[in-house]
Image 1 (cartoon, each protein chain N blue to C red):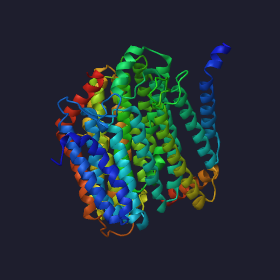
Image 2 (cartoon, rainbow over the protein chains, first blue to last red):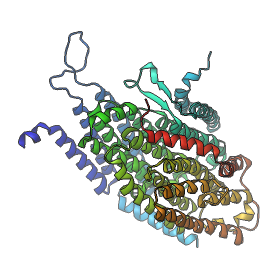
Image 3 (tube, helix red, strand yellow):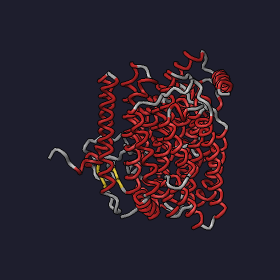
Length: 128
Length: 497
């Protein structure tokens, strides 16, 4: 049992980070903290991919001409792409938070929701 | 020869991708618009050529950069994605001529060339998701289209600040969906060692029914479900569609969710296949009830909306229910119904949202109050809206009727007659919310006097082209039915050698 847990430690780390990140996204009302949670969530997936690519006893996949055992380089390449996507998402998310702060004067979800609901009630009134 | 037919699959995606940064360099909104229009029409023509070369069951396989699949990225076109490519590029080509006036009204001058950049990025992302045969490549294109969509939704903030919070919610939920998708692809890669969809399908058969594969399946279905606004995961959709600029709503409502439905079909049928242990269970015990709930809940909520854009957004949630319902039958007629409805819903929602865009241009408001007496003030726009509405209900001689016909036929084929009755019953809800608008527009006195304020011709022509398509394909369903039927049988046949 202990052996099973210890030999899969990379997966435990991934699962912990994944759940922690996801919990932050769902539970926090602060828009910046949500983005931080989203980042942790994404990073856990990066770790999942990279740990999958590890070959026991393998070295970095650099061609030297000698017959050597390499780690699988493909997951690394995929994750490079995913990191770029993650950076773009974070940048866009934070830019949106800046704009939201400018027009709503707050970055708390509850305040923004209250402001939106007030606007919606005005819309309903105006339509009658 | 300069022009090579063999390169068409890659040109379809790369042309808009290259044109996007050029739009930034052009800086002037009108020049960017011209470039975007030229590129979209080129893509549309390429999509027509591609579809006509796969409409007898052939498959085009294009090895990107000359690296042969399964190692290299493959663009693989059959009747299924040929049809979806046609929908996306066709709607793009029709939305752009319409966009110029509408964008000039709703988006400030300094943002206009950037708007067209985002539009092209989204356009090429959606085409890329559809055309690619590589699972990870699909994720990258999905994120290209999603990121540019978030920006376009947020550009509605010039008119209503709620666009920002709508865009933020969409970003969070969309990214969670995309990350779920990547987890699924990663787990499949861990089991099969391949990213090429056809190759994965073949290897999965030899792998057997592992728990890793089942988990991957779950992550993929939920991830794509978030992107396509499957019923309990649709919360981002109404606000995003309501507060986005009119052009964006018209484009997204008729393309973005369709592409997600396509991705779902691709993974469920081509990659996992009906023989996979969970597929039939998901379809019967998950998709069928959720689709039925979406049909009724979406339409019921739509009835009570005062903002017409939001009303149509909730109606979209219901229409996605119809598409999933077709999938859940898991037979050729059901999948044919789904694919026909993909095409038809793009036509009707495109027309309806474009009509609302015309109202937005003239009145600056799309609440039910602003629709008073519009039948006299904007006769052409409102006539188009009514035609689109009839199509949404499923009145004979419109495309909506064809969709519902195939859905009911598929339900009866499975012997599920209560489902067939529910399809008809939910259409009656559509009658109510469309009638509300008709009543207000034609039987109330106009608010600002009977003065005519019809939308300009540049917006009416694309709008009426879509309405004409609604009627044409409603009367002569030969083309849609034959392509959709071929596509459905290709999907159910699984991987072809």
